[in-house]
Length: 375
Ligand SMILES: *Cc1c(COP(=O)(O)O)cnc(C)c1O
Image (cartoon, rainbow, N blue to C red):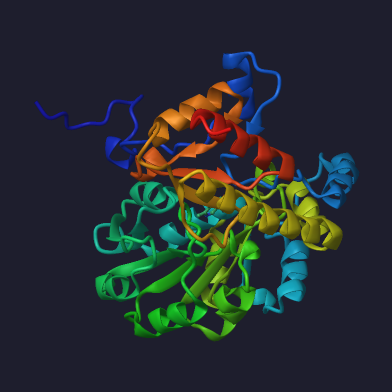
């Protein structure tokens, strides 16, 4: 019999995901379960160089102020980002990771029971998880078979009830990026109710940047939002810091709807410091771009299919001879190497490997050569 009431200790079942967010394995988990002393983690697209030294100094200095609340809306960081990227301050918002921005955009835009959210398949799972929590229908358009962006099909799927359309560029997990021209064409063809949200979590690694990035173009595009994060390029994933350029009215609403102190003082000052730590950022770019080329070539030499990546990771599919993706993932784990099997993205035969330090990339390729019995 159907119950008419929701028992006091129960959550609303319709809001909960069938499959919760699946994070890459943590170093501690693996160290403990396998008793290995050295673990190399190439699973979550973090900065292999660690945090910026300037950010570490800023955190240490700020720690003495940890008893003070941050200023609501994080105006210092907002101003610094405006100057750094040449954007109007009124367009910028800061969030507890881009995850918080995704969540709030959905809640601010979608009318439950009426509107829906559009994204590609496969895509970053947070778009779908937070849509569900906001009682927004979540629709997906399949990527092309080669994982490129299905511009025409995506535009055709947007209708008068598409509140938000998420495009990840460069995409996770493929690393492919639609060109800025393609996104401009898409934005021009969307219905007037649809906000195009470009998630540029990995844009800092794209080359040439001008061909792909939308952030600096956002102010002239009234139906576009662009998100960035401090989690990857800036090396601050554990502090939770992201930002976005939004149409000004929406930015204003975002600021009033966000929990006032969701971004903490350490994250804010670390972000301010990392933003201008040029030596660290240049080193990061060099390590990622060289490592990406090295890993891609090494994997191809082992017979893997490798997709051309604009991000700090590569997606690869093992050759038909030899062990399958999941087994490779398990065998690497036993050797203390954590990569990502893309099962949770619905890609059973694909792996995603974050670019590590030169030596970490070498250890990974050597371990794979061993798995495939190649000396
Ligand atoms: C890593 C990642 C983010 C960043 O999320 P944060 O909450 O800022 O750590 C956003 N979008 C995609 C597609 C990502 O892969």
